Length: 357
Image (cartoon, rainbow, N blue to C red; front, side, top):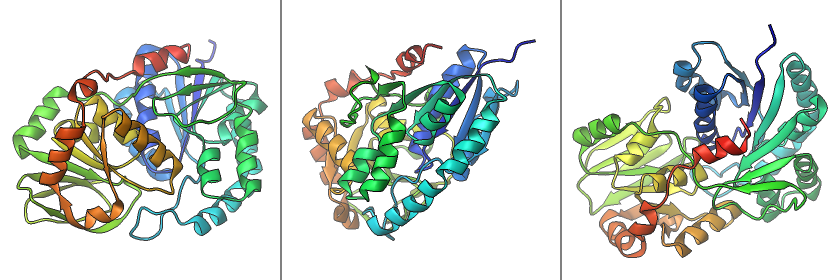
């Protein structure tokens, strides 16, 4: 009996947004094809995936492997600002391990019938695909090249990433994608994607908490002394956030599998400008307040586009010390175009189609 074909996902080990948007694609693959799926990502992200995916893995079609697939960005303590020195040191160590990682992955995947390798947006993926002779498609809104160039990371390191990405066969660009270069690549543009919401679960959350604001800086960030004023409703927040507020704060544990339902149940979301969070908020047609990080190219690029489209407002990081919810609600009502927001749909079907599955 021939082996079922396998799709290998190399997902960024930075934060959880890359994993959650890939899980939306993986759900489509498992539900609509007979492909097997191989996931390589960091341990914490994979722990989340292992909890999220059992309902889709009754036939053992999903294999998850803990692997540091990239470094991403490293923040300073109790801040959203990037620690360039620590980041560059970590990148040097990571790049030194490439050859060993690529050799190990290619040897492992030679025993699988890999028809496609997907990168979001690990540089290891195209290098592994090149060795095993498989097609490699990036599905992302950026590459680490433009991010690191903007942070003045060593040209030697940046060039290693650039050479890796040059081995890609195609690039599926999400909405808000930065200018990545690689003009010779086959490209396709798509909209926003997110995991599906459960209307009954959303209604249940609304009934329990009534009016809510969701505040998050990602599960991989720690921020202290976030003070809330001029608000009487519930606050949803994620791990790493220290909220000072006289009202109710519902802190969602890291193992919460359906943050998209909590976002949909909220009136407004205040968040670091991660693409995955942005997508979930826009698809849910919610008011979006983004926290500015001027030194991070991707964040600044997306915030400017969203403000120009009247889909979000933004605040500097120091505004978190005294978050005036009433004022932010007023600004959001004035500056966000609800009609434009309501036209945004989940484009997961188009991504699935473009992967030629």
